[in-house]
Amino acid sequence: MKQNTFESTEGMTPACKEGLRNLLLACADTKLLLGYHYGEWTFGPPEIEAAIACCSLCQTELGHVRLLHGLLNKHYGDDADALVETRKPGEFANITFLDNEMKSWAELVAANYVVDLAVTTLLHAMKDSTFQPLHMSLDKMLQEEKFHVHHGQGWFRTLAGKSEETRTELSEAASDAVRRVVEWFGPADADEDRALVEAGVKSASNAEIVGQLLEAVGRFAQELKVDAGLEKKGSSGWQVATQPDWRQWRARTRRVSESGPDERILYHLRGSKNQVFKLST
Amino acid sequence: MKDSPVRCPFCASLNSQKQSDFGTSLMVKQYFCLDCKSAFEWIKWGEDDSHLDLPDFLQDRQPE
Image (cartoon, rainbow over all chains, first blue to last red; front, side, top):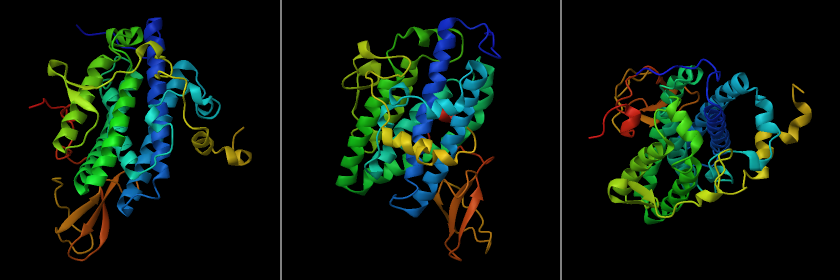
């Protein structure tokens, strides 16, 4: 049976409307922080081609942020500048792996492959969304993201095969990234998630989407002998050894704690030092 | 990685090698010509992306 489509949030149940806002903001926040880290790694990667790639990856992510903020502005009245500049760290809903500076290239590669792929997997499950404004935006976004995944996988494979040291560093970074991605997707039975699937805003539940993601990451890591902190548990598929404490999980920030991005990262991201030169007030 | 060889814009050789999926702008990849030793960029949009090594669901194909 063909589902009703939505040109706006009108006609959505309150849980669906709230869930969609939380999801758009969580994707935008993660892309904002991904953009920051890619931008930072325009200097410092082991190859100059990777430096140029990071610069391009950053541009893509920040472009996607503008698009998602545009949807939030049009359909929820959010002010795009305020979303970046006035929120407290504890209000951000990004994947927590991005909260702090990346200490090594292995961490950036884990962010590129695992974290970036996590958001892409979620967006892919919304490409036929009944929420038309999002549906119309996703083809190009996913086309661009395919190259992000390809790039992340390429470097993941390189670090896995280079030496024992690089494989160990990659394993540590990948395990941490996987654990934090699972936290971001949330518990299997969240009310908002059910409402989004029922309305056709998403084609699959977060549990199904994270299962799809962990299957891809688990198989790829196993093939390369990288320990990504995942085990295959029979018909349940690939899973993390320890689940987050879901009783502490907050739907608005998709975290089990009150943490947020490092203040210094937000300071740089917002251009706070150069506030006086801003063109708009 | 199974990227097809692309023709070098300087010497027309097909003996080129991809260096990176990203170039100085979003729409290009970086290549290097192994004959004339020139770096060049190649527009990536619109090409068949089935050669990309991606998870099955992103290729919109069924798992094996």
